[in-house]
Length: 141
Image 1 (cartoon, rainbow, N blue to C red):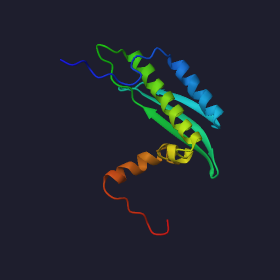
Image 2: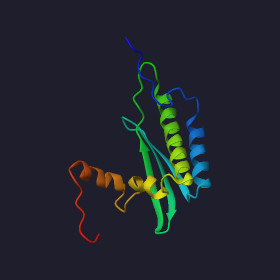
Image 3: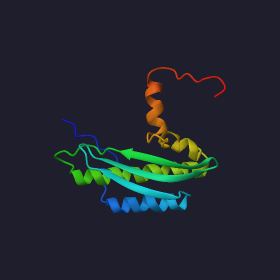
């Protein structure tokens, strides 16, 4: 029998607070105008980061959300929470560094995560339309 596959950051000892502090420091250093951390204690739980990102067109609220992997006999709920926040911290760190290096634009990184006035993200609005078939755009738009 093979051992269960390891998932990223599953063995992290970094606390949720330290991961959030790293996210806060990174966003502040790269130009974000504010950050908010949110926890939803539903089943399954969800963790969110919302931050204000300035662009030439104005300020946009960006929302990243993660549902931690389920706890099991090997990994506790608390460890999955640490793992989820660590994953968010590493994702932001890697993508922002890629933008600073010139591999991808900041706007391209965050496009799917921009909140619309209705509270959904661009990705939540468009991805179901993309999976339904080729996206049809109106001429001139």
